Image (cartoon, rainbow, N blue to C red; front, top):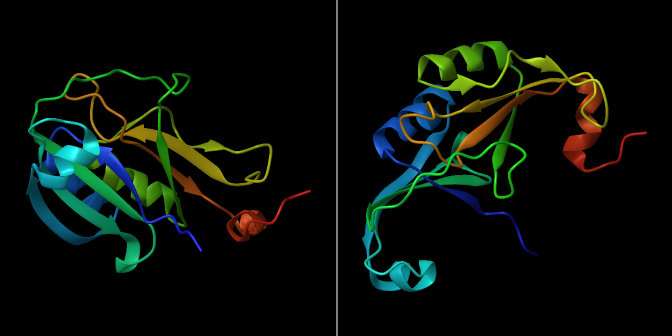
Length: 164
């Protein structure tokens, strides 16, 4: 049976991203490594691909976040909005939204808004906020986690059951 193993994010600065995802978000680093050319060059279609990478997960298991910092070739930067095709977000369900948001903001995260109450759909009754890992003028990119607090009445969402 297929499983979701990881979601990869290309980042501008591995150390800054590790500070955000590990230190502020609370994920555990499973491993860090550097890869130069070989299969990486072939699978990405990037001639001369050389990356620094890290895999992180909550509690050391389950779906992972893979951070890629390309050391070569140099990449471009794109300023995407949530409405743009290609925009990606990662939802982290937690029971400490305000405290976690405070840590993420202290680590350089930029919230799109204050946390908002979810008033419709399967997540009704919870709260959520989008934030960028870093200011757009430093290094815009895809890594825009969505931190959400899910109340007990949204439990069917976690099991995959539909809510009426």
